[in-house]
Image 1: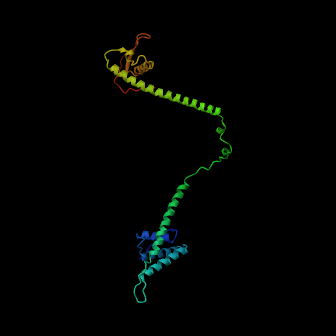
Image 2: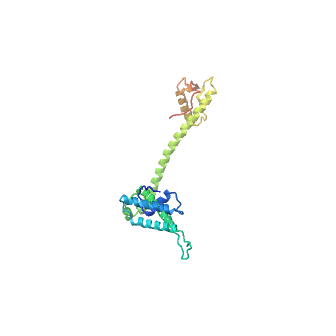
Length: 255
């Protein structure tokens, strides 16, 4: 049976031999030495026919395969004509193939790590000799200078906290307006048949903030026609009743 060789590039004779064994789906521990030797020699022949330079290593392994093949075909005989039981002629070859596969696997791992590392760019180390030659300026400060720096830090911290409190107050006010608008809707819905005083909507009449929030909520709802308001004279009492849209939509305050 002829073997068609697909000429490929191999790193060495053992690379070719492993390829032939795996391609033939053989166990590395039970190589069909006659078949593999024929395929190996066919490949060497193809290389020569294509004017590919065949290294000495390929020829040495070819000789070893032929020797192993001959030992398996022609067992040794003693002087008395009895067969001499010897170690499997393939044992040394199998051991070398296993070792080769281990090194090849390790080489593939290292090659992968090298390719990965090639995509990582490191920043060159900066020259810090200038800072090493001069002591840290803060180490030369006296107690008064340290106290000044600390006070500046505290003042800055207070300014930042003031800004945070301002934004927190705005958010709390927004939530309070929406909550008060819901309170007003519930109050108006309970008195659909009549108008009533704005003062009745104020929860805590002694709290100025409560009065302002209620008034802002009232103006917003009047603008959206959720309620109707009426004031017959300047500074007079404000009367409130249900508007055209008292039952529409979700109560939401947009600043």
